[in-house]
Length: 118
Image (tube, rainbow, N blue to C red):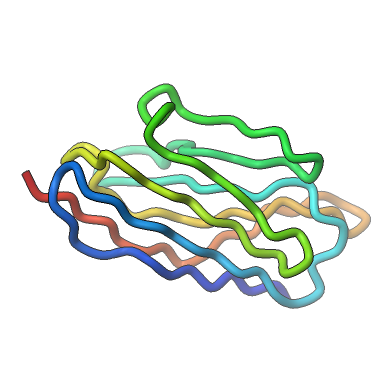
């Protein structure tokens, strides 16, 4: 069974920074991609950033230049450094791990709340 342990959420003032971490454990299989998504009540979950096993990254336009995703492959850990935070970044952030065990699975964390005050 795969588990994703997220940490690093909290309350921060606009312009501040936070760093999210997510460690994957269990019988993960072959790692394909790790990333972060976010969701606010009443809206669909949206992509924030992903990083592939080869290291390529993808960011939502709204966070480009402010957020940076990185990964520790050896420890199946992904990080999201969030700088210049804005009130509109307030959301629950979910860690996602995509891996192959015969078939491809997407695993999700339980989420960590980020609140940016104005």
